Image 1 (cartoon, helix red, strand yellow):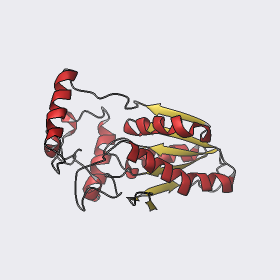
Image 2: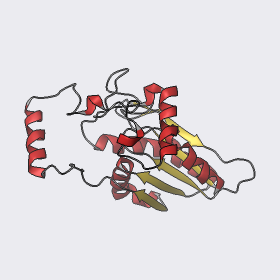
Image 3: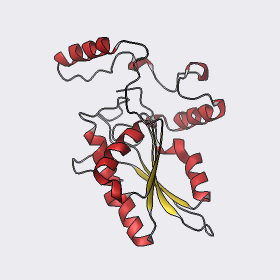
Image 4: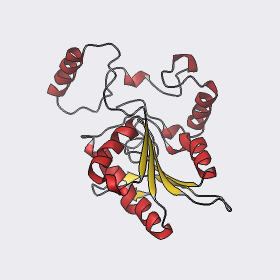
Length: 211
């Protein structure tokens, strides 16, 4: 576990190489919103086979990291800078010491919200990483066909009420354990969807419904 400068607990994970595999680099693997380390076990195993030590973190508010409230299924940050602080903490406490000790370069693989956070990190600390790969980086918000002015108006109106402990509109009904494959908007891979569902059934505390 890691502790951030603003006193949040984060769960980090490392997939080490098997004996006989020649190390090539340390790969920092960063998932998206609502994801967790176990979901990337298959990817990490494939990277291990190619000589990459894999390091990951559950962002604050999701996975097994600290949440808004104990047992809460809501994710929350006040500013996206807090996620960047999570990544800086991972590098300072895990990745950079590992790199210094082993002499291995550092690379990054990030998906969706993890890609957004990595872009922020690269802007400030880009020289620390040899290369980075981003898949579907979250550089804009998918409004699902709703005009941007409507979304801005709704957000503005919601903010007039002040801080709230409630889910955003509709999120309370999005328990990932209750969403059948046919209704999911994340993947077309039925096998991997079932695998993720099985993990959540075994460890239901890993899931979140929404912000």
